[in-house]
Structure formats: C-alpha cells, structure tokens
Length: 237
Image (tube, rainbow, N blue to C red; front, side, top):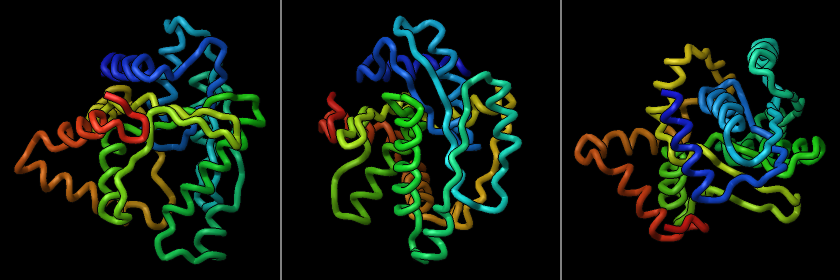
C-alpha cells in the first residue's frame, strides 16, 4: 500500500517540480491520518529522490483543552523527524472572540499563517501540506456552490509576502487509498478535538459526491480531469 502512495507522490513531485536540491521543507502535521502518512512518505521519498532534502514537522496547537501533545511527540520522535509544536490561541479567537457561525475558513487561514511563520523562523523555504485528490475535488465544488467561483488550491503556490512555497505532494492520492494505507501500517490517528468536526460544509460536499458516485462511479476522476485540463490555478494539463 505504501508503495502506491510513494509512486503517486513522486509523480506529483515530478509533474509540478515541487522540490529542488537543498530544500528545507516544513511538513504541516496534525494527529490526522493524512498528515501522519505525508510525514512517513516524505521521509521515505527523501531517501531516494535525487534532490537532497531536509525535513521538519510543525503542528499548530489551536488551544483546545484536549490537545494530545504526548501522543504527537511520541509519534514524531519514533519517526525521527525534527518536530515542533506551535502554541496559539486560535480556538479562543475563532469560537469566543469572533464567535464565528462558520468557523472553518477563519480557523484555516489563521492556522496556515501560523505554520508559514513557524516555517520561516525555522529556516524552511517550503511547506508541505497533506491535501489529497478528494480535497482538490471537494474544494472545487465548495467554491463553485458556496462562493460562485471556479477555483481550488494549486499543487504549488509561491507566497511572495512570506517568501515561501507551498507544495501538496499527495494531490494524486485518493482518500480511500490513504485510509487503507494507514490501516495497513497500523497507524493510530488522533481524533480531532474541534467541536464542529464532521459538521461542516466540506462534509456536506463529501456526502453529495458519495451520493452522485452511486450513479456515476467516474465522477471524481471526471472532475479531477476537468480541473487539470482547464489549467485551473496553474494546474496545467
């Protein structure tokens, strides 16, 4: 299973020139299955990619009471990756100060900003996120349905204000493959402590796609192919 993940990640890295020799890459990680697998796979890929890479992992502590620091420290210590936890008050700002009715967007923006700042402080020139193929499709549909715009995140994004490049090496990996690979590796993802987890617009879109897939099993590949062919946000063909 892991070999399939590595193969898809290497193809994405090559297709979009995600890495260069001497890159120091911060991996944005949480306790979830996607980022756990990204850290494992990037470390494995770094062993045989022609480019010399240095990896660090960064977790943003949002400030929820049940944040499981010890399990995270144990996991990344065992993986032997330089690991940093950034303490923030994002949860307080989003849920108490701003009292957002739909908190996900603000939370995501603040969390990304915290990761970018930490990465630059640690001397990284790139940040790797664990967004996968299903995330690409869901974000596209969320933008279309809720914002009236046609966009999704790009495989590679340069942030000139931060002088840092974001890469998404798992964009060719289906969520079902990630889930089965995590199970085969006997990983134990840490459950999210966010109070709105599982009750979001993204979950509604997941449910919509799942329902449509019962009638058309090619729906995900069709949408993903359209995104690539449309050169959306620099995807290319």
